[in-house]
Image 1 (cartoon, rainbow, N blue to C red):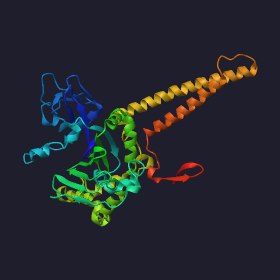
Image 2: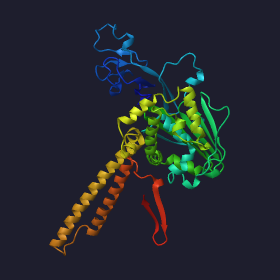
Image 3: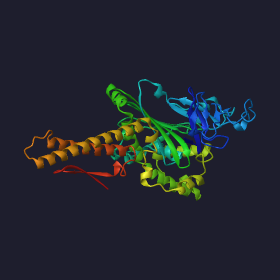
Image 4: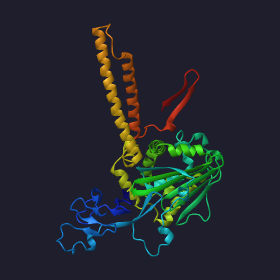
Length: 445
């Protein structure tokens, strides 16, 4: 895992998760290519040096028996970072806590609703090809939802004035609170509250009398310049029991298909826009000079930028020039930006398992279809040789099997693609036109 531009090795010693810099102090081999030993140490794959959770070198096979002169030196230790596990997430502190830090600053930010059994939650994690700052700005910007996510989770008919308010006492080192008095869907669901918990947590909360309580929780992880990891959680507490039952029993991979579609609605233009902004900032422009934001719809984004300016030396954990260099290193194609396999599927137990099953079933279906096609050929050949001969299987039945397996195979291949890459045309760019004679027609533009 990448965090703050450093490659980490996360490993479990049998009772606790640990995070090391992903390098052995000996010859800098990546510890993530090693193994966890029977003693609960992590072993370097290169020469077998093994380290305990504290980073201490416990095993140095090449050292003379009875001697620990080399192993006991501080330089023999791996770099270990503090790890806390909360609500199914790992929080890694990439520095030694200073005595001057208040105790609450050392506690990972959590969501109380996730510990409430009345809530059911949908989770997704995905690596994104744009920066942590862009990710937070995007999820704080509620006014883009009706347009960017038209036909996925919203509708552009819900667009209109968005009067956001940053509540007193305003932007603090710990973050800020906000309120949208009207709320989404032109006020049909009631007001929506927003909270930014510095440095990387944002959540919207909505209590609708007709629906219940819903939260949109985003942990934005700064991976490296121009790259971030999103951990999104959607806790729901419904007034009725049926929606909770449906969500609780829907396969996770199916939920992730929908959530990935939402994330892909804006991935292309966010990656491109960030590159443009990085170039502007590198040339001396400020964010306010590069972007024109005269309305209160951008109050949360401006408050976040204010927090960056006041408490983080003006920006992300890396200089704008480094962000620009990351974008200039390679220009990703549209398919790369819409990638699902490397950014999500391969690291998701539910989706990688479903992909494996889809591929296995595809193989079986293809084999059945091939056998049915061979049998159909044999039947037709026998009928041509002896038209009056009795056939053990009806050719029509075999033809139906062949046609059915072809249709099933094509459907499975479409499902397989859904685990690999997102659709090239977002749903918002589909035109739906109604024709009285032919019903509803959808065409791409």
